[in-house]
Image 1 (cartoon, rainbow, N blue to C red):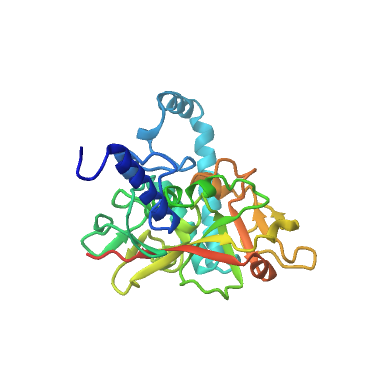
Image 2 (tube, one colour):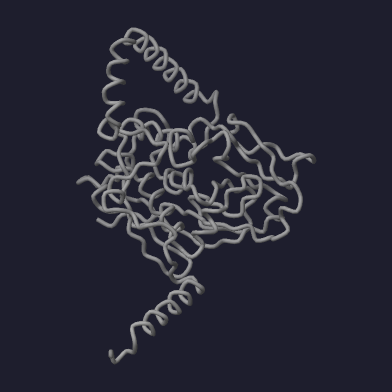
Length: 337
């Protein structure tokens, strides 16, 4: 007989310990199996562009054959696409199409993500209370002190953050509730990415469903990329000299008002929405839910953007009525090299 009691008693004590720790938010029993070592170092979301090595055998055989057969058409389409991109960049450069600095940064990120198709890795977290620091490894920094965010050194910062935050929430105390929060007309959990520390007086908050860290994984750091889309600004590197210690934040929210959905709160908006729609007497107090946004089809894990919004937008009275409760904050930290 053990000096610590019977095996059954020790097992019962362990279950009580785990229950108490989960109850007070220190740890939580995993809702899903832990990631394998390969998944932690070679992560792609289900919608991400993937390199040739990640293709199935069928794709590796069929796609090259189809490309050879339709090569004249593909060449024409490529020239057409290239021409459209040139026109687009000229229009943006001349100010005929307005994009703020964050939107320009995200645009560059997505182009370089497509260029490199690099995987993500699970980042280390340093947690204290309700805040976790995302630690960017120095293997993403070159000898000149430049942080390569989209794959220049083999890794994608966006995918790494997405993997880490989604895994942390999924395997935390609220994991089961977040995973079951699938009613798109009555969502309760949300993720937001920002360059600024949390301010309860924010008048407009863009979020993703709480189980998908799609846009927050970009907006939490992309603002630190060089400004502009000209030759000098068109890069996926961040010069760490002069960069802030905290690149940005990801906030995990819950609707605090239990009666919030006693009335219809969803106003569906189209894939063309890139800025918050105008609040009118007809839609005041409602969340704008964006469906079908094409770029959300190229990243992350949202299964069907025609059925699941990639963005829930809170503005004005909607924020006041929802009483969003901040459950956890993630800080994207500047690498220490």
